[in-house]
Amino acid sequence: MMLAVVVSAGTILSLTGCRSREYSRYDRGPYRGDPSPYAMRGHYDPRGYPTGPHPYDARDPRYPNGTPQRGEALDPSPDGASYWNGDHLSGSPSIRIDLRTQRAYFYKGQELAGVSRVSTGRPGYDTPTGSFRITEKSPHHRSNLYGEYVDDHGGVVKANVDKRRDEAPPGTKFRGASMPNFLRFNDAIGMHGGYLPGYPASSGCVRLPEDMAAHFFANAPPGTPVMVVR
Image (cartoon, rainbow, N blue to C red; front, side):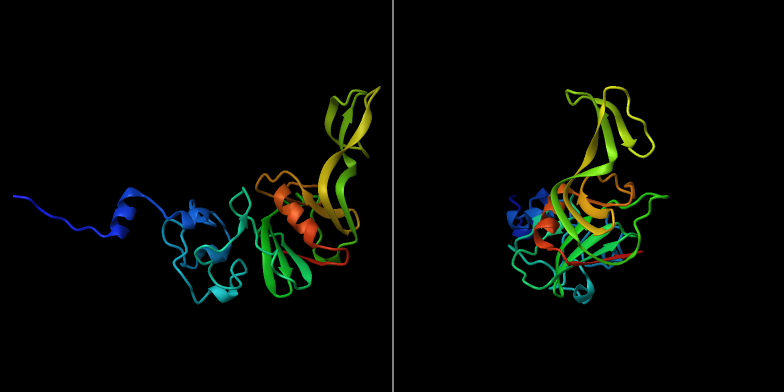
């Protein structure tokens, strides 16, 4: 006796683990592991996929215009938590840096243009809170305090030095740490591309993934407001 079984296309996809390539940007879930309260409000399925519009979406800073729809273009960062979606926006730029969640939010007018993971000042070198403005832009900036001592051929003789405390070995010269796409906003403190270990680790500056630092740099002219909160 032959048994006929009818299975819906949706069931087949579920059983085989297949996904529409139109949802490729959600392969691992857009914000899996994000400690912010927005990740705990229940508008993702167990795999991390958006389940559609949700009443909280209007207050979710990641989705100011509602949950991203099929085919909508985003520019996700390789770190899986940062993204840029502001090239089509035209409002006045502003930046908000949250020390508690280690995130930076870039706005154009009232619209959220991008979100980036950051690494801010470690204990003893805390990034100051307050309201500031960008005062300088330097695409190939180097620190004049932190870096390494190198020989005449550029070889590193002593790394991770503070020029104010660490004496230069004989025959060496100081080479400041690279701070690409530097946006100065508070005396010596600024935002720039750098290493993000997953916790506050800088000497006061705000490190971003290099791709996100490039987006922020390109879209923040001098005078852009910067608010740092805890």
